[in-house]
Image (tube, rainbow, N blue to C red; front, side, top):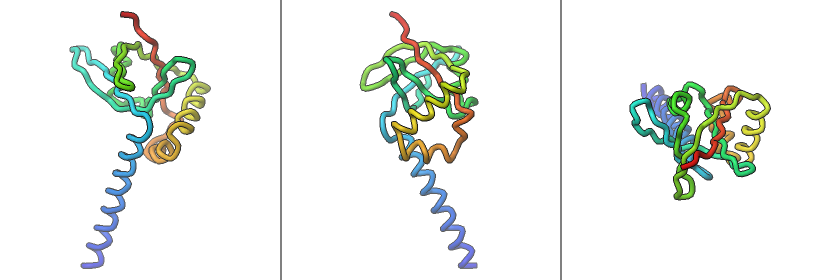
Length: 137
């Protein structure tokens, strides 16, 4: 019985270590706060990675069924906090495999080992690139 308990404890330790590594990885590098709103106006904050290309910001919905992504599809007016500043945007999901390949490559380049570790949990080929268009006013 003692050997079985040790094996279970080791397995639990490995799982806990992996989860902690993913949490640390997802918080490494530049992390922004995306604020989405439900139809009642309730604000939700999600921490995400960001890419800036030609003065345009891009996010990746790694899981298209994630709540933050579902909220912005219904109400695309969002706020993004980056570098201590908050700005308003209109989120535009982009269904284009070439854009997805480009964004995945840029995120892998920017976030390195962290992006590779997070990729173990999900399939980046089903991710959805999301462009943030600035809103006036």
